[in-house]
Image 1 (spheres, rainbow, N blue to C red):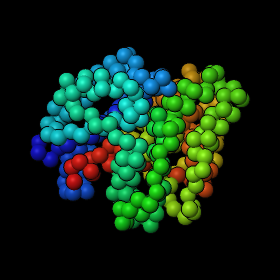
Image 2: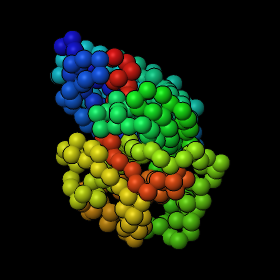
Image 3: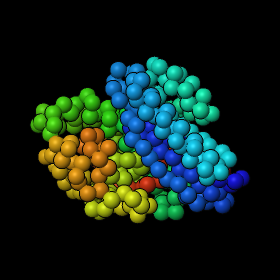
Length: 305
């Protein structure tokens, strides 16, 4: 169908697909919204994609292409983020995706920040806000974007080479984590954000990505069968610290039984929560709202306006 389009976000941890029906320039009706944890960036500190991770992700993309065909999607835009930016063998992955008929565009950290801000600034919940800071915690990197939604103006954006997968693989060695693991994790995030601060804290903070969706679901005590119900949920700094304590006190297998937490994210949720805690502190924020419409919505607005 002519008005049906889709966006695919090939992330370090998760591959996400959103299929929409386009009503007007800024109005999309979501038809399909799904995510699969393929862990493309597994072992990414070595800067090389592993064959097993490539195969998992290509299989997922094959399924997504079939899903797009079943929904009569005419146009697809796909982007790749931190894992593909860093990998010395990314062309191997891109060529295999191209064989499926999918052109995956590897975007810079700054472009990822721009698209994440676009997703929030066009959202009915925040498009009238004077100022927002958008926080995108990914698997391999994290982005912060400060701007004015009403003007569509970005004032400052920055990408940190620290994400939930990267932090977990480099700092969290014990299960459950040791006191040393926790100290090293906090120190690593603090070092990555060294020298960064926002000019003031008079703004709304909005978070995009799996860390926020999972933490919002845990706070609400609800399964993620309908993630749209989590859109706009507010996480306070106390909520974040309580969840850090919860995750740090449990093994990965025990975390898998926490209501609201995707079992596939049980091993990296603590890393994501630690990054969020540090970001809130650096930005002078005592709370942040969860958006379930992240980077891929920015891709939709940008590619199919």
